[in-house]
Image (cartoon, rainbow, N blue to C red; front, top):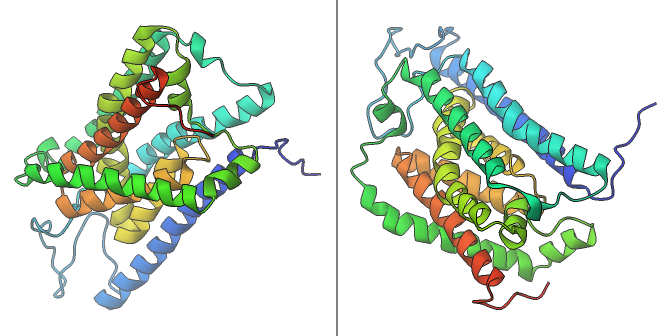
Length: 310
């Protein structure tokens, strides 16, 4: 007999379904890419890591201007991708499952700065290990597009993306999406937002701000956009990679209330990375989005702006 997962809040189930959808989109993209390449090459089998020209010869990596490069990825990189997904997505789902078993909320007000330092160190370790996987084949500068001549565009891209996310939030609020989720018993705030309101130690608030505005944008963009997105693009194509990596990015933040907005944000960051070919652009968007969220929540906490009615 199969026992149903005992919960009223459907967050765990819907995040698990979203993970399966991300996997399904990726696999479908792989099938379409495989069939398309077989058709273009007349059934010629392409060896791993090689690009084949119309006359059957190996061609060099694509020139700049063709989007994020993927030629240096190998099938063995999926071993590290599984580790990443297992940590970020697995820990997200496992945390929700344990919370339901404990039948209570964690007292975020009692959280210590050392706990956040441990989280920062963990993210830095994963980002550093990810870089080590790739830089043996391509330089760090070329991999992430660190020499971006169009860096000034972040002054337009980042505020534009922030305005777009705020507009999406207003639309979801206006159509009753947030209210519908609340009626299902869904937690209305992410743990990071609750922490900014409930933390008693000022150092915890400072560390939370550092993590949200500096560490998370750099580390998560290196991992999700710098590594997972182009790896998925290599085998499944651009749009399957955009959708699947965006969904996994949202699942890695265990909040059903934020699932749709974060999925849209994750997909948007992948598109920005694809178009600019530089990790600086999604890092800037991510930092501005998180920074605006932190600033607003702190102004609410210290009554600089009134608490919105729930």
